[in-house]
Image (tube, rainbow, N blue to C red; front, side, top):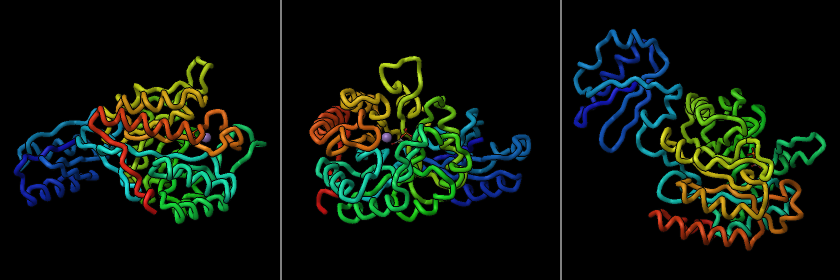
Length: 346
Ligand code: PEP
Ligand code: MN
């Protein structure tokens, strides 16, 4: 249930409603907008709430049941866009956010070189995996903690926040120490223990859409994270499985507009995993920005053909520069912008 307070409701009236809601066994989430405060009552027995006739309580304008299964993630609950801060930049506001880098950390020299490349190209964060979810157990599995240390060094040297995937609940604490954004990969979108664990961290979480997940299931996964207290969730569309085999996945750009209508959380797009082919990445990045995505997560490597994982979909320095140039122009038409990276001055 959401309780919408009147525009001029006093603090005492708000507190009074909160206390009454808690007294009948509900959890409370307060959303203080510029206009008015919305009180979300979560988890209790609806009949008990109806019994206390809140609609006639001082300061209350109206009560609206939330029909959706996700509450904290729902736009009904929190009408204004959530803006997540990552280092000196934000995701979800007017500014677009660009995370770029190789699929995986391959070694110290190579990663530092990539960090410099994406920094010079204008990225706001460096992406790379140290723990890699590979389809085959015989493929390169990532450098593990050593890889995290290299990422931390790149962050230090180039002033770029880092985004990296966490695959196991046992590693959350470790990753929390080294990274700025914890990425939940497509294969783990419904790993509920992992979602709860990152929900207890204070790091921003980039939640990729499961390759066979509906938008509602994706939002329920965001709800798992938020229900543990971490509201810094960024959704990432990365393509879904369809009958089509010409591309690695089918990048569902309608998911950007649909998700943004249902949730206040930022939505970014990963065109690299979305299509799986280098030649199509730039066009899909442009389309994603045109559709209203809040940012792009893209695989970039100084020598893409030599990348240890996902080489076929990794773009090189020139294509990255071109992508940045084109999406900046599209952003401008939409009244948004790709801000100059704070790391450019480090
Ligand atoms: C990645 O970002 O390299 C990755 C493994 O992504 P996904 O989980 O979307 O496949
Ligand atoms: Mn990859």
